[in-house]
Length: 504
Image (cartoon, rainbow, N blue to C red; front, side, top):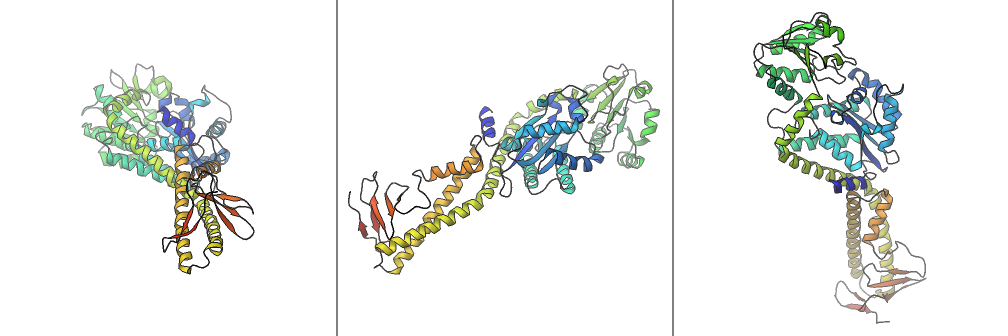
């Protein structure tokens, strides 16, 4: 893990996406695992407010693109930006945006986790593959990420830089699901809720349950309740038509939100998963609540939370929230640790593959230009040599030599490209893309052969065979200081020596 962290840090500033600029992926986020629910709630933007707030946030952050992911247990800000804007810069601007009126609760800036480059890629791939979820292997996160991607595209805050990366993350999640058994069995936040209620003997055919909200989580909980043969399910929503649609699907009853809050019926369980900005169930609702002698189980799956703090220490209710469900995460992970290892290998391989592909795409124009310059120089030098030393030989000799030169230069350019790509993927500290290219070039041409030469300058053969002195009208082939044998120029057709340079 330590070696991986060093490697990720090394590549943090060299993760090109598209185009000629050195664009970097950075991820900033907070989850329920970090233990600061208030910060998680503050960073959660209600769906109906995202169109305006996300556009403003992107401008305030100064990033090129922004993908915003908000679930019931995490918030992620995934950005594409140039290498001069660090993840810490983005984090600090985030805090300025969400706390423009000052802090009203305690937290540290480091409560927001940051990741750069390859580390950010790995983090996002793990999140979308449900390796960072409370329920490892759950499938809901993949759908939520896909919706976040689509939302960003529609809002115009995601384009040619983040879209390919996000699409790759979804493909990695699919590969993890297909090649491991992490998704086998009951794997979702709803399944954790059911396990918790079952452990408390709160589920049977007579259990009276109210489901508040009409989203995907409500549907999942209702589906599980039917598996436990729960017959009395009441759907609560501000839009009664949404509640009626669910009631028809699951053979339940309905009530509008206002009526439920004013006069709650006698219940055993309330499960709430809404996007309300403030708690729905306050002190007044707590006073009106009544159920069995053992109290009402109140399950809060909302971010921000739907239940007021008063429910934590209540004799009338037992609060089950996302934080209390964390204890089941470690048990879930222990059962699946072998499959998790397989998934990690898939993620690591995908990060390397994605990074290499985009690096090669980014440096391709520079390599093409380098190839053209090298070819021009090599052919020019070859023609001068032919004119000076092989003028009496048939034209086919020159054609064969030219073909050989093209193959050698092409092979060298390809090797140079692979070396650059390998250096960038394996890490190069805090070097820029240009510096990394120069380092790879020095490895390919250890003798430092220049691409051009001034009159009178000696051009060293990179293999140490000899040197050519550029003069006004001709090139003399001379033996290099390190050469142990004479340099022989062969006719590529007749395979016989053309000129032999004796020892100096």
